[in-house]
Image 1 (cartoon, one colour):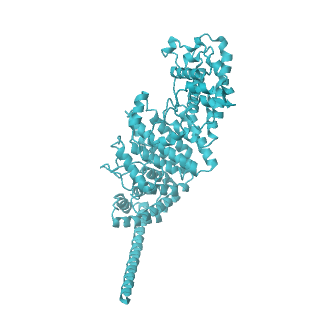
Image 2 (cartoon, helix red, strand yellow):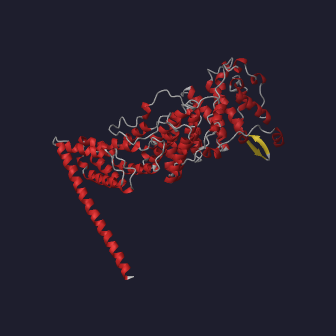
Image 3 (cartoon, rainbow, N blue to C red):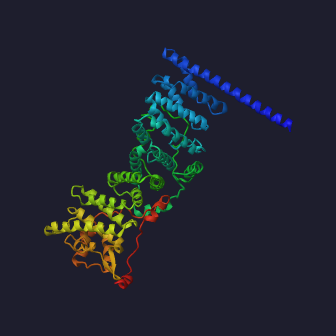
Length: 578
């Protein structure tokens, strides 16, 4: 036993000596490299650039992949950290070479040292901030090697880049606008593959978690890019629904552990039918000009043939990630932070989504967030009502707002009966006043002149079809219509003849439900459509922004809060109630 203990002590002593020798050797090499670096830069400043050019060539070769190379790279980064005060703009070539180094693929110790170098560099020379930011954001772009293989440590790389950004961003107060411009230029063009879109968007949203000052700008950027995809999904409803049914459901989450995220990226790339061969990575980025870097969108062709099926899958995954981010914000945020985010979303809706012609999916992000707080539906309804009832708003905006409010009230199952009735009351009051002002001089229906009126009446009919149960009260066991709906009779049977002008589908359904419920009587001369209107010459546009949401990956967010069409009322049941 004594001999065994002596052997252990001897082994420990030997290991300690080896470690001490290695530390001494490391310090000696570090001292030599510092001397070489300082001398090379000093001589360059005096006009002799030979040693400096050799130094730049050494770093540019980026030959630090094995164990000895990693050790040498660590020494170089420590050396450059010591010399950051000398790395002014005249040393741009050397700084560019350092920024090209493959630092994300090494161990955590080297990553920490490299990030410390970046921090020291920016502290000494803030002019390098744009180049540093471009280098970091470049790592957010999805890449595979020439064999189509995704790096096994892809999510590890992204995590290290976020670590770097989180540490260096606060050092330059003016960095927010600079960073946003780089993020905007780096956003993949809509023609790029599903993995490219998802990878960049995921990193963009994760960045907002520690740089919240960019939340408003970045969310608007994201919404606009999703809108670009959304507007590509045009065509016959049946064909689009077939493509939605044929689309793939992806296992995708903004917040998962790194291992599962990596497999998620591989899964998306493997399942996606639309992978672009241009998403390859040869390991060589150019950080010489931040203006030239990450200019994907500007270099893309202006006219690209896009597959609608591909657009649907991109939209589905991107919307799912935005849902995940908004949920994270709502769950983690204070009441003020939640409300601030709602204000941002409301502004994006008012300034971007509302102006988009017949989008199919993007508006459901707002639809979902509104459901999270009881005060949000009334604010959204107030915004739409103000647009509809404001004579100074353009007709096209009033029509769009009318379509949105009808579809929202019809489909949002989190609305209270009170909110529904107040909305109907406001719309009926406006239409009744409109009739009083214009009916005396009306000869024949004129949809072009009275477009807003017909849009609002069509909305009222649509709401009634979906929410008639919310418009009845039970008093003493007897169901009665609430007073807010009294104006329907006057509006529908007015000389404007809305049943003849509004969408045939909506008008026919409204008449069928009203007759089944015995809600009101129709003036016969106003219930039949003119031949000219029947041919579509004077037909009002039929567009319901919140028609069924069928995107498979993101659907779980919408399904619990969405009201499906309940079908026609049962005449026998209605008779029994009466």
